Image (tube, rainbow, N blue to C red; front, side, top):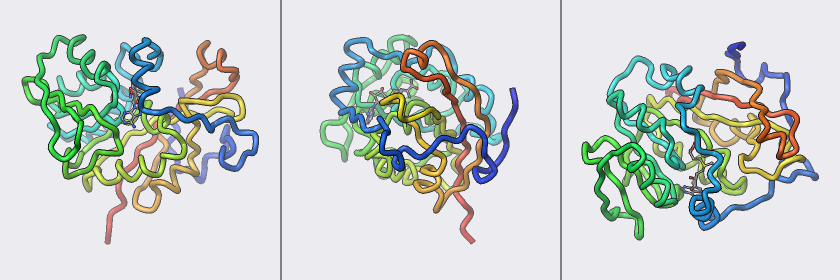
Length: 255
Ligand SMILES: C[S@@+](CC[C@H](N)C(=O)[O-])C[C@H]1O[C@@H](n2cnc3c(N)ncnc32)[C@H](O)[C@@H]1O
């Protein structure tokens, strides 16, 4: 596999059009929080992977940068096994998801004892904390999250998160992420690329140009790798081209 280390302006191959510029785009599907909770209840969770994400394993050090005992954030975390993997390395994990079921399954499937408590500052929210104290999973909307509640983070793993957010909410989502990035935060973001005229999402196609609009004013972005991710699942969606990309996003140094 080829490692693409380049900036977006030099990336010319397989770059799709911006869905907001396309009159025929199908990317106008809107999922409510209730829709997502129902997906969990009806076991419609094909997004969940039982193995460590290959991009995370390959680019872990891009997030860690040789640092230990980091605070790492998982937006829209589901029950990602990657949280346990990083916690076992000594990092502190904070996740956020609207599905109580998904969060409780995370703890039970890994035999991790936990406690639950209300979250001061977010009415109706609950936080589930591992008894050892290194994993805290908040059950609430990502849009209710702020640094005053969960703090700031040295690393972020964003897989199935930015691409799952309704396109109309992307700016709000990006602003939450920007607000919880510590100065030296290394944010790993996985996006997908396909013809937005052929599939309604999620996952939604998030063009690089939109990442620039959302994050580029304060962050530097580097494409770490782009792979052909087409499997039978995407073929069933009607796609014949499907790429997965991982980006490293860091705050620009202020002079
Ligand atoms: C595509 S899944 C990805 C889960 C996880 N990141 C993974 O890779 O397995 C998206 C997750 O986002 C959660 N979700 C959707 N909207 C949300 C919101 N507004 N706030 C918090 N979680 C949300 C869903 O419950 C679901 O678990």
